[in-house]
Amino acid sequence: MAARWSSENVVVELRDAQATAMSVDCLGQHAVLSGRRFLYVVNLEAPSEAPRKIGRPSKWDVGTVQWNPHKAESHVFAASSNQRVDLYTWRDGCGEVHASLQGHTRVISDLDWSWFDPEYLVTSSVDTYICIWDTRDTRKPTVALSAVAGASQVKWNKRNQYLLASSHDGDVRIWDKRVSTALLPHYNLCRVSTTL
Image (tube, one colour):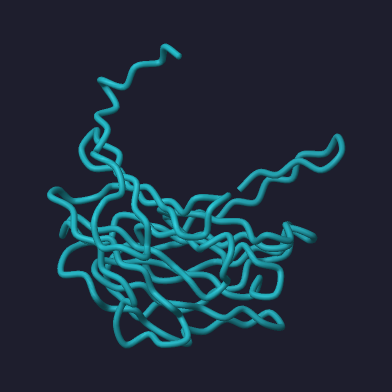
């Protein structure tokens, strides 16, 4: 990890981490790097300190990791591995899994926290489903949106709390979480016109 403060470069080497994903919290205080056996939390205010390790309950690599973007929930992050998302709590230099989300039948490709509601998380998978989760009730997704092809990415709209977008083999679909079908016909990224 390399970071820049003023005119200094601080380089921290984590040779054993074999990190596959990384995220920085909304306060800019911590970064989490996902390794095969551990998650490594780096204190960005003192980056030369040894990172803290959190054991992982999975043999699968982490596909994606993301801190909750809300200040009140800045101690929570999500990490996907295979068909499961683990929700972690980071407090006082210690982290632990406090919940797991299991609703996909194939590998989870992406996840994203809602910009409006700190409890809402969306996941996408190659199983053709986009699942919206309320992390207060982790038994099953609150909404499952079905597409024809698996999704490689999913992102919440930053201006409208109900809308999200997902990408499917070059197509983009716009979804409204209040209805179970795509709002607009899919858009092929290769065919979208840029003329106004």
